[in-house]
Length: 90
Picture (tube, rainbow, N blue to C red):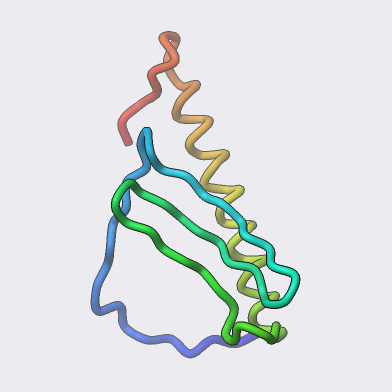
């Protein structure tokens, strides 16, 4: 699937910590919602339409799952990088 490349005009950095969590909300009568909570800030990831799933939505969900898995592996490697289990600063 080819995506149109645009120049990034802004970046928002949300740091994980004690209150950060990710939660999937499946609904019987609409498409699911992925909630990413960072304390006082929440990001909701939804499909392109609340009642329809497109091939692009499926592709994005798969890409998101893959990248989240890679992120988790990188974080785990960093955490186990020191004998005291406190991790390393990247």
